[in-house]
Image (cartoon, rainbow, N blue to C red; front, side, top):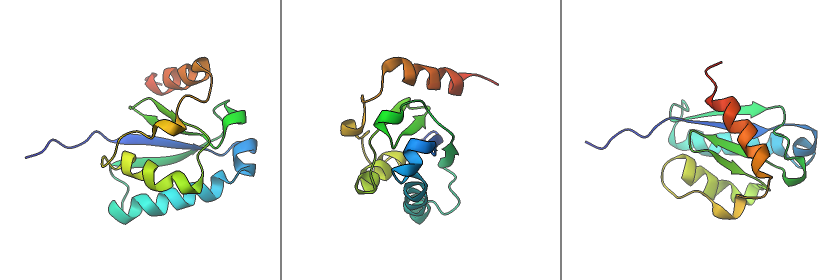
Length: 115
């Protein structure tokens, strides 16, 4: 029997800049895509986040525990992102490495924290 994939926690930024770029709508589209394969969103917990601090690079999405920070995400990227989140594809490299490393590290420290 195959080992169950670890549950992922996915945050979509809904800060001012990302919201202006369409993050609220993008969140809903991603949710629909994920629910098509996982109706109760048991493998991927999708949440909104107020701001990651990578405003110039939005729309931003983080994936934990993978420690993947996606930036400049558009609706056209969601099929590839959903495949990764569902465990059916690799991380989407073209969406990575756009924000400063220290911005990413702050997010991982927060998500790694037991509080």
